Length: 318
Image 1: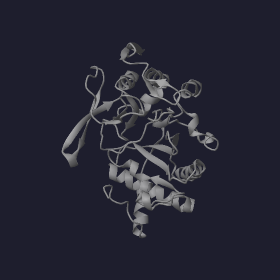
Image 2: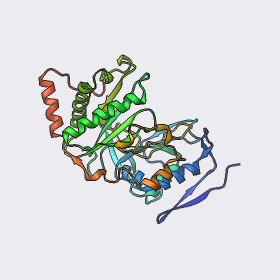
Image 3: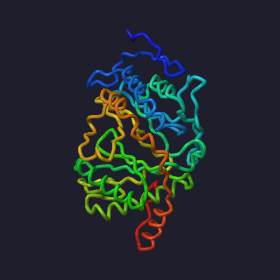
Image 4: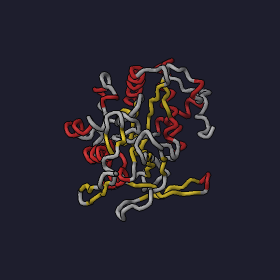
């Protein structure tokens, strides 16, 4: 028999949670209710990461070992306080009204609809075609270690410092690392991606063979780290800060400080451990909106490199 539904008070709103005892994460037996309580515990942080962004939901109706649903359109039955933002998909001549989080209850309602992972755009509804977030995704190839990722992250921070940009690191929820930079929403996705590619080339110059920017994954050095500039392509998304990853151990994409990087173990951040960390440290990305960077210098780097013979970033549909 399914467990009886219960109601959670989320600020000034109430969210009904059906099947609260359904096991979502079998490694430790954590349930749908555990997931909802986790997102309540980190509510300020996850709302800051998602606020006003179109958000794709990764839903697991029977738990993370079952079917995974990639949900662009808002699921049916949403309360009238849940907001959306319209996004266009010109290639398919379609559009979708995606979840637009403005309140912690929006997140908990999404959990009620079996959402585990939250994947926001890097733009906001004020102008969805002008990103305000540049994403640096350090993606290790199969033989690369997290120590390799640390080394590339240190080089990335050095380049950011030279640019006068502030990077906000977080674990990916897997074996990689993400660094976010707030940018002025003056450029379209193609320019942001081109700037990100110029940054990746500079990191490669300084890190040497540790970084491989080869386009096709199968052709990359299996012991290298890919600085994935493609995550800045329109409609490409990453798990947001505090998002859980849909695997049995329930790891979390956790904001960290640069001083933690030498010793951090991504496996330490789960829905069981993060609430206490958040209660102790608060949101380590709380000031991210206070440090806004211009892409002008990076775009000048892109012009310089291309004039010197560097290939521009391959077409995103290649």
